[in-house]
Length: 266
Image 1 (cartoon, rainbow, N blue to C red):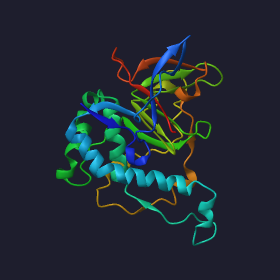
Image 2 (image 1 turned 90 degrees about the horizontal axis):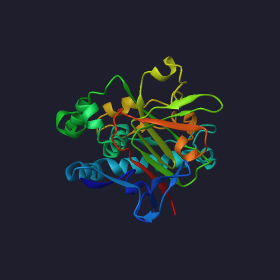
Image 3 (image 1 turned 90 degrees about the vertical axis):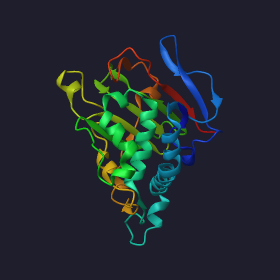
Image 4 (image 1 turned 180 degrees about the vertical axis):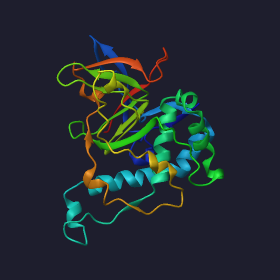
């Protein structure tokens, strides 16, 4: 396995970013010892890691910078037409692949749970656009990072949790990437927790961008203006660090270890 930086270094996750594994102290989960080197895991082979770095990471970084730029008050003053966001475009297929390659690095069990998706992501450059078989029971969701956690990052490989105080909600996830200005969650698309009386998923109101992976590498000029004004913010429960939440299983229901890495921008 090679060292995969998630999100990519091009998006600001450089060697000066601090990284800390999680520890549980007095029943409270929190970052352990902070070290430099960016947020990373060992989870991709060298070929896949190089492919992500050479093909997908720069479009992701460009997308993240445009989201940040268009989310500020100055964006309205950059518009040609008053009241509209300025023109901006991105490559949804390349951006989503950057995210998904990172998630497969964070949670190696995804290769076992969704083998067709793993195979297609690895080979789709030779099979042509639109050939990725996306599982019906899976959703890739996206949001802005919450303003309460500036400069904070998180990688999680599927710790499932439930809020037991106040309104009951759940977060069932296969992989999470939190790095300003964006949060990505790979979650089950069904509402099983709600049917079981555990509460609705906290990601249910987030935009589902699963279809992005079906865009080919030639689609690099998709307009961002309709996306940014409706993009909500998301407060990840592991960054809240309150006693409202209880963690109770991993994404595949096994006894395997979960990856939890905290990050902090300098």
